[in-house]
Length: 590
Image 1 (tube, rainbow, N blue to C red):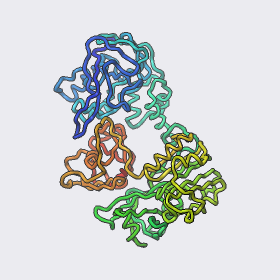
Image 2 (image 1 turned 180 degrees about the vertical axis):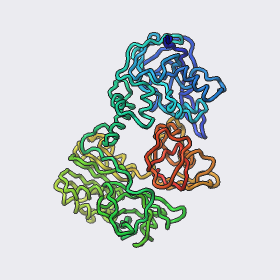
Image 3 (image 1 turned 135 degrees about the vertical axis):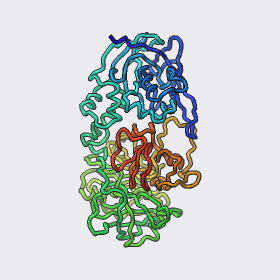
Image 4 (image 1 turned 90 degrees about the vertical axis):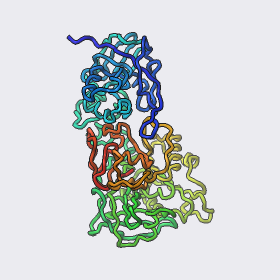
């Protein structure tokens, strides 16, 4: 007969700053046992805290549980440890005898002392538990060995202490164990029936519920998200039309304004190029502009299915690639081009469409306008564009003609530095700003697509939200590196991307396309992520062991190997940079 579960230790600790890989991590992973009773509150235990509330803590993750049986398992796996795995070593608040992950179910309720708890989710897979134990691979091992531990929500506040019996008071619906729940999120070959069960468990934390809804939607071909209103979400992008880079012939180079030139690209064999989605971009490797060859991305400004591609490039005075493309490139030249990519694409539906741009940001929304015109769309279309003057307003006549062919179109152009005599297409003096946008009477149920400088896109997002457009309906195109996700790091003063310190490495060349940096991989780096960090390229990660897929990055060209192997491999055109090493020269969309 199995003995009743027992609370062996209550462990708490406040966040502290810890040095790690030349950085500082603010973390509450260090926990120590407490003698006597401790009050379990809705959001935490008295005396406890978390350094990163995005991934830990809060009502759904108030208390972390780990089992003494798993302690023994890891002692056998890793061998002797410096401090012999004292209670709290795995960052848990409650060290227990019993309650194994393969028996405890989401939604189970337990009474401990005077408090009552509910199981809400498995442990968040995070690098900090590996930092605490000195075992960097531990986050992946917790998943692969099916020993993650789990979080509790406090249903009734009360005091608890070591030695309390743990009494089960209710069973969660669908009998989905903690280990099975963890595997559903992080491991391949998911059981679709269990996914369906998971989203029907009220106790499961909202973040995990949304992740499982996304997995179900992807499996059903509906794309990520939870059934948004028709017309507000772009369709999921198909796989790239070709792998790596392909030589395309320059057909024409056409000046569009004083600062912008369009480059028309065709297949070398004269055939039609694969259709793109309206709003996607091309990535070019411009070998003739310098060595290493600069790699840059440019939105398609052409109709999505015209058989040829058109990109439009703004000349930047100190831009190596743009200077060559706008000043020295000639018809007949060959350019290395990656297939159309990007999720900033026009969604189907009947709702109104807001196409909002500034400067060269006009290009992807112009492609969307081409698609709407080709469809003879009955949708209400609002064209809002800001430029300095007519001389710096590319595609003005083209956009005006396309809008004239749409029965429910509205055109608003803003010139910030043009006198009245130079304005055209009923342009308005001044900037396209939050205030001017608010006065246009835009429909709040529209789907909005915004492209331009970062500050402009942020202003437009805030303005649209203020007039009632839901955030899920607002889509932006971001060509610079994506915002960093570096949980727990503090005191960062990131410089613009740069070459790594020291002599060049002996390995393959790794190009971070969005950041404009190419650097040779060296023996001192364990992964592409380490190289990116050394270059101050913005990065996104959490587990750093190939589990969570936060670091997944589009692969434009090249091959990688993995160490350790990810628990679930990414798609063929993606890379998990946290555990990837280049097997050839790489070009990454970051």
